[in-house]
Image 1: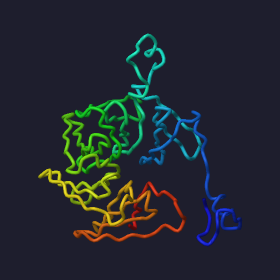
Image 2 (image 1 turned 90 degrees about the horizontal axis):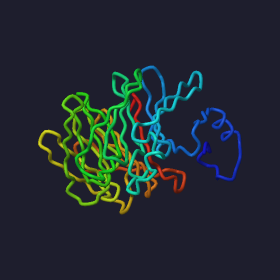
Image 3 (image 1 turned 120 degrees about the horizontal axis):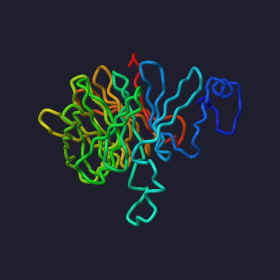
Image 4 (image 1 turned 90 degrees about the vertical axis):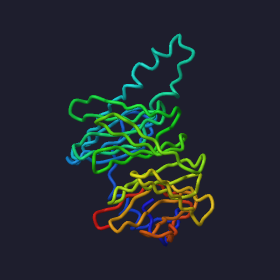
Length: 276
């Protein structure tokens, strides 16, 4: 990591050293916690999930202080497991995707337990909303301009929509069976875009009509992961197996792609800045 394009992983040089010195690391208190999702609030605090630690965490970059908040589903799990043969820690928790609302409330999904959750960063109180489909394995997460929550159901093969006011969850079945939806994003018009990891396609959902269109990718088994939409309406996404950054041109079915210089880099996350 931190190497120039013309350097091999075994080489050393000023470019690598400069990149390393520009990166500051903060040690997470819980060992083997598997931090995965990340987001930043309006105060500059960094929020992240610990998938194995079952914590929602905040980092103050100015002080380096990290606070871990155990999600309710994981509290007293060892005591609860005693004498209950049906209890399994693999059926609870495992927070992954996380995002911050305009009011700085924290939203995240729990891969096990079929819930979408909200954390009040001031009171430290959690609230959870149940997904109707059992073993849905919520994965990707994004917020609409109206404050509602959109998410992918990895095993449920659905796109989910939560209205926090009414607490109602709607689900939209994706036409391709077992397509394993992953990343999710909204464009300026409120259209929902998502990746299909096993379906090897980009999906488009019109939330008004409920219609879903699917756009097959050109590279077989490319495993599209995270997704983002720029201001012009172009849909960007990473392809884990193809080692490429892909783009679906706005209002078309034309795909473009850029091969990542580092071989087998397994690109996953993606984020657009204000300049697009």
